[in-house]
Length: 478
Image (cartoon, rainbow, N blue to C red; front, side, top):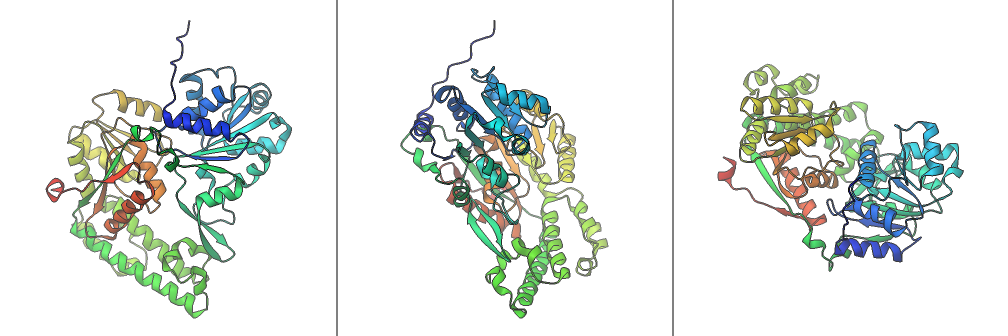
């Protein structure tokens, strides 16, 4: 006989949300609920408790999220074992049709859902409620003729007439959309409301006055500045080359009467670059310089040098001399070793496999047990379980895979080796540990340090309920 599922009493803010959902029945709804506050529990309560007879579609943004959502709905609180089916690439087409006809609740990925709609839309007539998990992923971050990513323009058309409830950890980012030859910076929430018309909104601010603050896990952000004079010198040259190239682009646009395309704002150049009526040489040079600078900040020193052999860039650097004087081990890796030695469980995020390999090698030589997750990993769940349960597994190093789907609250500290400019993406990375200390590594005296400090300020402004800056003293960095 199976064990009874634990009975869970909703927290005050969850009861508030569920009551609002009932009040707004049949009115489209957008819910902002920060990471770790129970979006899956809200989903379960809507499906199993609030509307236990309704046909419901749950749309998740990835296959890994689908697996986790199905497992959660089946295993955590129960009540849906016989009602639950899925529509995904791992289900054969015949079984998909069976699920649609026989199951009350269907968890689906957008692509498979759209293709099934196109084949036989009548299969979905009995589904009246649509829950969209991570609804902000509908919005195209930059570029493209539409504001939504594929296949959502078509899918939202199919879903007309159904009650749409979209949930996300945050609805506070901007995104870029091309309008003819210009670029428009839009508020993602405004875009969602344009396509999910008539949507009511529940934000984190609306939850103040409930008990939500009792359950917020504060995240403390700290910049850990790493000194490397050689990296700083390379960075300064690249910064100047980028500024010069951007000025050339602006000058060429002005000469041809096209400056209005970027609205006179040089910061928009990289967003609109492919569409700008400028020479291909300028486009290629600007893109290459930005990538080179990213490699310098994010790769082991001698690894990024292989990118420096282009005809343009080699005029500004003595590659042979750089190869001789640059260290093999990144100063950031040395800092990671120091931080990891001060904590029992350390999570490290880095962009490139070369850095994953060097971190693992250096830490293992120092006696650490190191686990890794990259795009080549097929045993992600096993690695996460080992990091959680094995006291000897001290460090987990991850490349950018599944950061939005993975929760790693058992890490005492998160180390971010390199950052991108997108505030929301970085915030979502930081929240994977459900609060605690996040240390952002930067090369001191470089544009990377300036970028990271701007990022931290943006995060504080947009997500004030759960983030704070923790200043690190010079003594601690030594």
